[in-house]
Length: 292
Image (cartoon, rainbow, N blue to C red; front, side, top):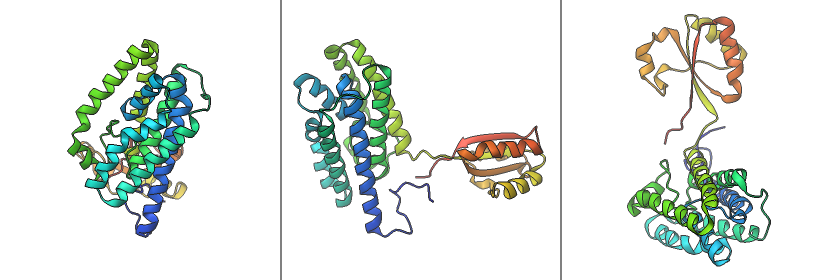
């Protein structure tokens, strides 16, 4: 199974299936984001920056449901997408925001799953960021002010044209400061935790964080290690030219290096096999980053 994001077309899927799959993932991301917002953050008086945070803050001031503000404040984004982007991207964005707002309205009357504190702020920020990241990864934006460094084109081009990178930071700081004045310093502190958690979860999700790792083994017994890993794990060593850090080749002899791409669940067994053959072998582990 490929670990590439659905935003990149699957060679075995027709364009229609691929678009439907992306639309489904955008809807799932929207539901997750609404779950984090209205089951953890809003009922506890926490906000998380961006348009979402402004909407939550507006609820605290006016008493109107957060979902109403979410759609109204993001409406300019939808108009811009229909003007500057292709129709499919605009449809995904509209669908994502509609599902996000609707689910927020449906969840709004329910009590929070966790009452107050850092746990509620952390969980709310995590689910909100996870949902936003899933949507961005599959071609939609739920909150344009939660700017992320690894957004796929054409979303990145649209954000660049709007020059929202620095403006987003200023607005987020203003929203958190305003929360401190209106809600109190304690609420603002928990809101900052939620904002940081949302940004990090969204960044990792949108950038295609992988559960695979690149393993580089330096040993004087590469032939024995290579044969054992192929027999016991079914893994063949890869070409050294695909290293994430090509400078490693200059530091070591090529015939003393082996490289593997494995799942995190295989790491313990791989290390055990290598150590049994060569206890002094060096094993370097790094995340396997997806190429954009």
